[in-house]
Length: 390
Ligand SMILES: Nc1ncnc2c1ncn2[C@@H]1O[C@H](COP(=O)(O)OP(=O)(O)OP(=O)(O)O)[C@@H](O)[C@H]1O
Image (cartoon, rainbow, N blue to C red):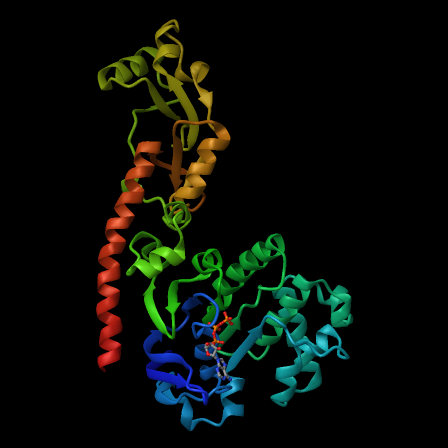
């Protein structure tokens, strides 16, 4: 969708801000550009909407060389959100949001209806906030208006330059979550500049780690954290990257342990025999429709008079996670419930028991994903070179 081919930007004073950059952002993909101040992130972004012209190389949008497109026409296809939002102070929130549709010549009524729809989408009730002026909003609310305004004309591409940089950490996290939810609905092709690695990891389908005008690594977050391509990247993502990896590594069914499973209506004697045969100290207890009920210990069963059912001796288990939840969620749930294992469920309504995650399995899952990502990183390197050589 957006393709950089050997793009270099040298400013008049001789500063090389971007140095022979080649990479591609796929349609519907969100790539975060992350790196220390002055490494060329903003320059990269501003070349896409021609606020800055490259010194050499070319940028293609949907296969078309943007140098041949009229900048005004180009910018209509590209939403742009910046930290300083840049709302018009004398216009209401609704009119600010309707700016681009209005410029595109939409009828006032249609433009305002669209603006109201977008405000709703970013979590601002248009009937409450629509008639306010920017100064009557909090910083976080202004950022949301900025995002709504950028989306109003439904551009296929969004450029976001530190859009959540000016708000406090709590609001920032909320805006990030809201933006992820929004992006899962609208699926824009997004370039997102940040110098916060946490934000880059949280939002990016892939992360481009910048160092001095070049991309040092372009990979999914788990690969950047698990297999940094260079010492520079390892240093930039931080010594606690193992911890950050927990949040980007999902639980897979192959990671799980399979303890003995019994049902609520099983007879105590049968269940006890099963546990003994498998040498297990406890079993997962399922209800009639194979949903998770809880667990039962071998001890409780062995002390119980035969003739009863598992139902009377089992304990409920409220801590569970769906397949695909992150290892961080798993770890946090274990701590919260002081549990040595967590049941993992699958299915439309998380109604099907698939296994349990234990601390040892969690550790293995982390190692499994590191190995896989090292492989992925090697492949990604090849494909970046292919783009460069094309
Ligand atoms: N108009 C300009 N003239 C000369 N040099 C410039 C100009 N604009 C940017 N630069 C330089 O180009 C380099 C890259 O700047 P750029 O703004 O792209 O960095 P950045 O990674 O976005 O930084 P930050 O995170 O601080 O915004 C820097 O060294 C900067 O000083």
